[in-house]
Length: 159
Image (tube, rainbow, N blue to C red; front, side):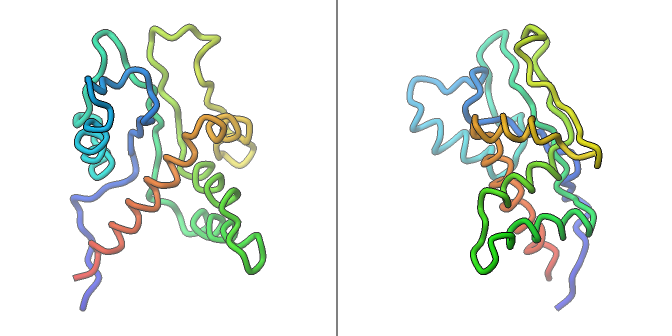
């Protein structure tokens, strides 16, 4: 069995949209929307699979899931911070801190209402940004997408 590089798979510029974004057109039945449209988007992470309310744009969280070895090691270290127990809180925040590269706010959102993306001294997403995104549930969405996509990438790289 060989490990192969699938050149069609690239996770270095993932454009994540939160399930809670007001710009999403969820239609009449939100449960049906979740089972069809949102389920497809979660598999592909392609914003073209989504529809939006007319004259509205989503907030886009630009992520790079193709991390360097030292970044992946830092994420794994955060997972084990709790000693023998997995420290889920710090793990999801570590993932978001390393993979989040920018936030693209809709043009029509006033400057004082936009989510300002900042980096810390190491070039990672700033703790204040991650703290806010954690409170509104976006960190969990980034964490889930990262785990699902990197796991599927690992599986597809095997014969």
